[in-house]
Image (tube, rainbow, N blue to C red; front, side, top):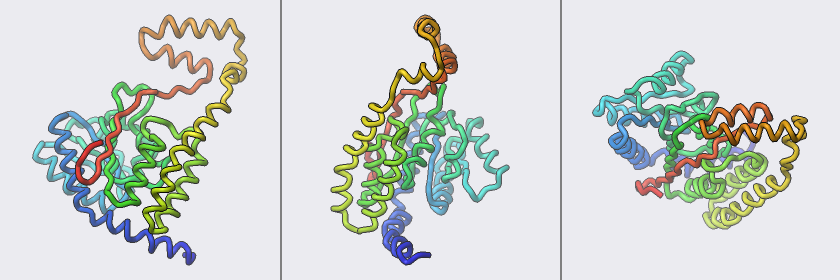
Length: 288
């Protein structure tokens, strides 16, 4: 380990320890899940937890909470065998009694959980792409219901600043990171540097400028796109393009499939524009 890496880990130890000892966080999420299932008995909640120890503790607490409702919580994490993970994913998707699936980072890779009603972030990784992948387990093409998001955040300056960047500035859950990959990596590095400096004023001043940087980059990306290239690449003539447009206008009233067929013909990749509901809940239990 390099000397600077050791210093970085030592400086991060305090906020991490603060987070792990925060029993109020686990109490809040258990209470909220219980209340949500009381309102929506058939709801399914996909819950992401970054720390394995926290996942195991939360699973035990939720099991006690859900047993009273004759419901179950399943886990999907790196410590399980492939067969165990597949069984957990299948039960969550197909069993009416498995209401909650707890996932570590493994749950965000290559799986579809469109049966879920909510995606819940007990914590947030310092990686915007990873958070978008979490949301993408639910928010996929063909999904009929809105993706509802709950994020738990403490009042610690580091965690609350990162939560603000994710949901208010980057607007994850309502907007894509497409075109922002390089800026996202830059912001993540800056976040780590400011967090380890140990001064809340640095984070405050930095955050004040982040939203403008993201908006400027999105505007630049938009201006660089040439809509004429879509048809140029596919070498459609004007008559054939008009036929496709007429087909879309006439047939789109019967449902979504004609739009998908048209997109395949043109080579255009479609993405749903439904905006999920974002719920940012701090440890005090208040919902914004």
